[in-house]
Image (cartoon, rainbow, N blue to C red; front, side):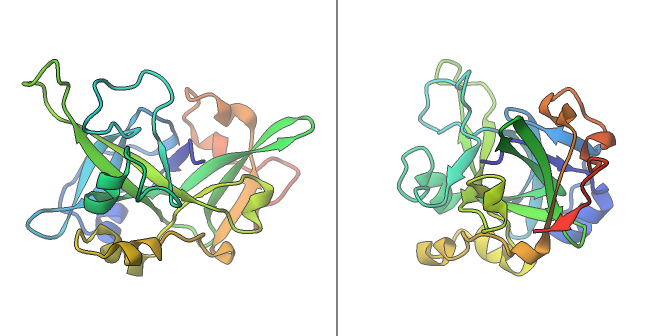
Length: 231
């Protein structure tokens, strides 16, 4: 499961990497949580890419209401093509979710220890996502709600010591394949693999990250004792 992440790159760097034309007023975010609006990169109908804000927690188009609990923030790669809540979005509406790192909690005898997992070389991670549109059936004139979920897969052997799932992270050369609505299902499935372990770094951080209200750079500082390490 991926239930919390951060995005701290300057907007100019995101524009250069993801090649969208919008210039959004994005502030560094250190503790992005479910149901919040998050920046998402999706294809434009006329070609190219655009950056859009979407609710993190996919709402199926046929849903009668927005769930007040247990938002669908993740879609498992093993079942996304067949699960009713996700299969249409997986087929027709795929996106990239930029991040600079994400958080997972390892269960220890003394409790849960949070880890920050990020690119070993620094820079951006591109999570594979799916998105959907929804309109309140009781308010047909209401604006569409755009929402999304992050794809997850089995972890690398190294990351499995922390958690039994990890987000699907796509290298840059796979971005166009993932975003292209014409990509065949079998080619999509081939992308839903664990990211190369050598390209990631993980280290334990303070439990301050547990509280969503803590949104400062200090929460990603390594604990004083352990050093950052490749996994």
